[in-house]
Length: 435
Image (cartoon, rainbow, N blue to C red; front, side):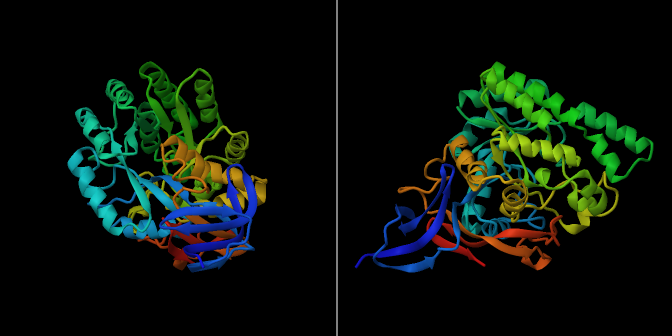
């Protein structure tokens, strides 16, 4: 009799191509069978998935785990547990917020070693682009960074400075030579600074004022510039946390011109609005800020048309003390690593009839293809890594503070009801989460 590591029996298997009923066998961390035929044999883990949906493990392209240096904000242990509980099996950690930031080989090796010791999921590290480290990009690429991250406006972290236009062009030329990819925080520093100073001078310190200080026009101006630079340098570019269909349309036009660019948005831009920022305060503060309901619906329309490539959480946690006081001074980041799939199921699948295969494409397959991890990651087929999440699509629950694995159990979604619960998460064939 055959003996396997894991058998998942008679589940609804979801890939970007569709949903089929079948069985999955896992051996030595790999998927060794995907079939609708009965599996004869035994295994260490045997799950009757007949009522459940089996998805490729999500790839969260955008998290801030802040370790080393700012472990009191979040770390690899709590962060990866949160992701696993949300069905994520691979994450890409951003180069800032940790200290030292990941801007040279030494910093990369330090952070990578900590991640290897503490993370319960797969991970890769972003390398940083700052004014002083253009000469370090090649060594970071040799280390194995998943790509490079630059800011066009202030990052909010003193030791990770934004780049001016000349610095960006030099970096993009080098990144192109390395056949790597640049992720960009695209907001206009000039527009943000001008409007923020105007608001503060007039003592306009409300949540509405904060949102108005970082308008969509700020994104558009920065995206126009970076797309021009991408075309000029032939640099693969990834625009992160886009908030508006107007920005998506700029990227779409550039793609049609042959620019190698992709666009990422976040679950909070698809579910929360500027009204939530006004009601919840700094717990819902992020940059760029939440937009109005019309913008949210137009962003969903872009998603349905296939104009959005990737969804990443942009999990940017902080101690609760940093969320207090003046909205302009409070830390700008939403904790969302654990709830991405919940939001997409509730707001997308259930409320807006977005197919499961589209959600898989945006959260697993497309990230794997864009960042050269496919087909080891991002799909369910023989030979792929056994990174899987099993969900009960019909299961409803209310998110409570005690459900969260974050170091700081804060979220704008606490109290929200969701349909679709993660039951199991497998990383390289190992069961790392069970509800």
